[in-house]
Length: 112
Image 1 (cartoon, rainbow, N blue to C red):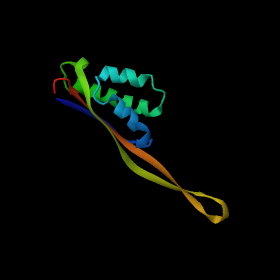
Image 2: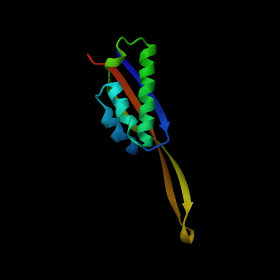
Image 3: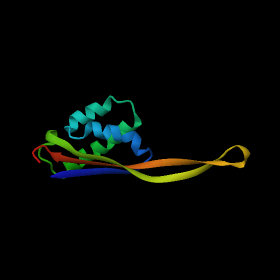
Image 4: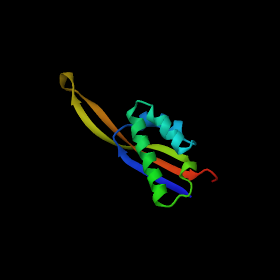
């Protein structure tokens, strides 16, 4: 059985979170949480929260062996852009693109 959790509209670009999603993909949940705990990046904190949420969903839905859950899918997609203009010299303007992302995690039992 699969257990899912997501964080939509995370206030960080997907490019900054994707390396951590690739780091934990295919690992046991406790090992992944231990890895992310020692990484000093905000993207790792966001991904760690989503994994804990998926683990909580697994407990609520009656997963038999919580210790043997594996991260089957960890995906970070780009979200919408918040566009702003910043005034520059001589009447010009530069665009600021504030990027958001969607984080999705799927846990599965190790036999699947």
